[in-house]
Image: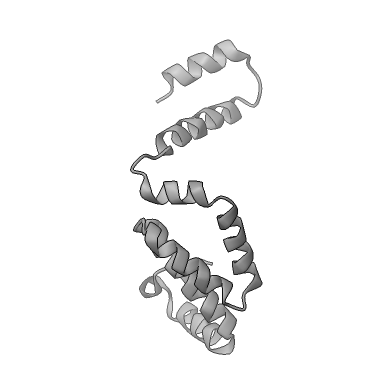
Length: 124
């Protein structure tokens, strides 16, 4: 996936040649790549107003997987729009949850809550 969506300048010459052959040989891959890159731009630049046009374009495409993705987005359109328009993020919370799970995995279930508490409070 990173070959299609990543920065082409960072690819090796053989990888660039592979991507060029793939895109020339399959127009559906080219269309999927373009749509995915557009969606990445919408997310990164938080362009909530461009989302509807993008979803309409996807629905007019011949890509059933992308249309299925848009169907899922439409089901949760309110939270998706909120994520694109809100300045708030739950990244800090998710980071702490990930840290806690990592500490728990390192312990392999050997201790109860008291040791886990100590490890969480004193972990660096």
